[in-house]
Image 1: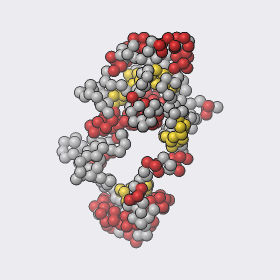
Image 2: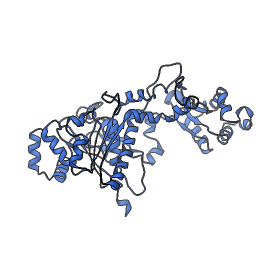
Image 3: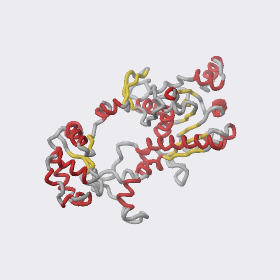
Image 4: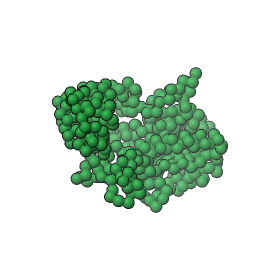
Length: 408
C-alpha cells in the first residue's frame, strides 16, 4: 500500500530556472514525487536547452540530465498578462523556485513579498551565486563560486597554480542544500501554516564542501585563520599514509590508478598481507598513521611496487575483499558502464523523442516506501495544455489565443 505513494506526491512546484544549482534542487524534488513545472520563455526555453547542444534543434544533454521527471510550460514573464497568469498559478502551488539573476524575480513583480500576499502558505526558494551580502548584486556561476570558496587553492600541487576542481562542487551541492531547505520549510509550514522565503547560495554551498580540508590543513594549528594559508597537497592527505593514487598496468592507457586510503593499523596489516609484505606488520617505523605519514615516500614506494604490475580492478577487488579501503579512478566511459552503479540504477538508460537512447544518472536518495520512476526531461512547452487546463481551468481556445499573443 505504502509503496504506491511517493513521498512528495502532494507537492506542486513552479520553477523559473537556468543552469545547475536550481535545476538540481527541483530535480531531486521531482524524483521524490513532486510535480515540478518548469516555466520557460516561449520559443527558446531555458538557456541550457541550446547551450552545449551539438545537434541542431535538439535539447542539450546538459539540459536533459538536470531536468528529468519535470514538466514544461511556456510563459512570457516579460508580458503583463504572463505575470498575471504566473500569479494565478502561485495561488495553487506549494513552492515557487528560481535561480535567475540577482533581483530578477523582484523586477518581474514576482518576488517573495509580492507572492506571499496572494498565497501566505507559499514557500519561495531561490538560488543565488553569492547570496545576500556585499557581493549580492554580482553575477556568478559555479566555477566563480568555487574559486571564492577556496576550492581552487586547495586543489592541485604546491609548486603549480591552483586547479579548477573537475566537478562543479558548488553547483550540485547548492541543489542539495536547496532541496533540504525546502523540505524543512514544508515541514515548518505543517506546524505554523505559513510559508517562508528560502535562499541558498552557490558560494556558501561550495564553501561547505571544504570543511574537512580547512579543518585538517589549517584550523588545527591556526583556528582563527590568521596565519599562513592552507597548502595544496596534490593527491596526498596530511597525516594519512598510504593515501593517494598508485600506478597500475592500466594507468597510461585508461587513467585507471588504484586509490587507497588506510586509516588504522588493522587496515595497514591487511594491506601488507595482500601485497606480500606481512613481515612488516608490527614494524615500529610504521606503527601508526603519523609514523607512516612521516615516511610516506617509503610507504608509497612499497605500495606502488605491488600495484604497478597489477590490473587496476584485480588489485581493487583483492584489497577491498581483504578489508582495505580502495577504489579505481574510472574514466567517464567506465563510470557510465560500471556494473555496481548500473545494478543500483545510479546509471540508467532512457529514450528521448529527439535524441534517442541515452544514459544518464538516477536518483541518489533511496526511500524504501517512495518508489522512483525516472522519466525523460520534457520538450519545451510539452505540458502547456495539461497544466493550464488543470490548474487554471483554461480551454483550448484560451490557449490558442494566448499563444497567438505571444504569452505562452
